[in-house]
Image 1 (cartoon, rainbow, N blue to C red):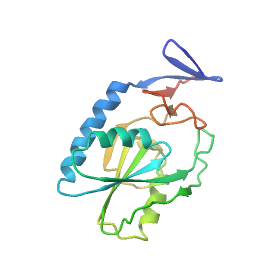
Image 2: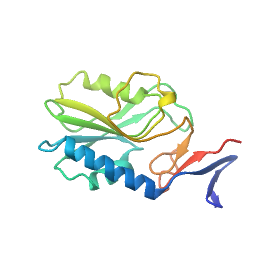
Image 3: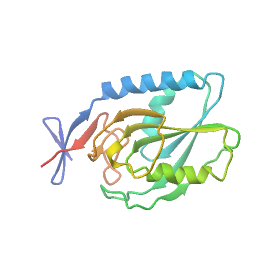
Image 4: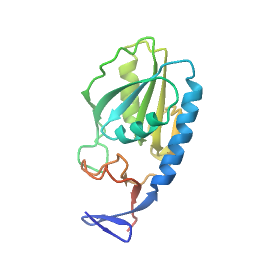
Length: 184
């Protein structure tokens, strides 16, 4: 990786700035305020989808003003590719009991919606009090399923993005901003 003039170059791919750290943090604060209002008097369980959502969930939780719990799923659908394989695998199950609880699924990005659909199927075998979905990014034009995403940070076009938890072959998650693959 080399950074030249605020670009990230990975092999022949050039990624350009898309969302700044300041824009991301500002939107997360707004989302946390809304969630805190919506769940006032309740103790929701935030369930992060690993690996991508851990940075977003960490910053989101820091801004939540109500009591809450945290757990994680680990799913895989991309491998080392820029395109989803179309198959979701559960690599880590929850450690908590979700029955009768208010659940907030936290995703870094909703692209096709396959992962959320997979999670909904898992929860269909349980009886949570409620389940909502919170995603930092959403690609409306890429959705293949009719899903309700309750809290959306940013709606973005169908570009491949990296940084702030989003990876390319498991790398570049540590970038503070989000970069989009440049059109050639």
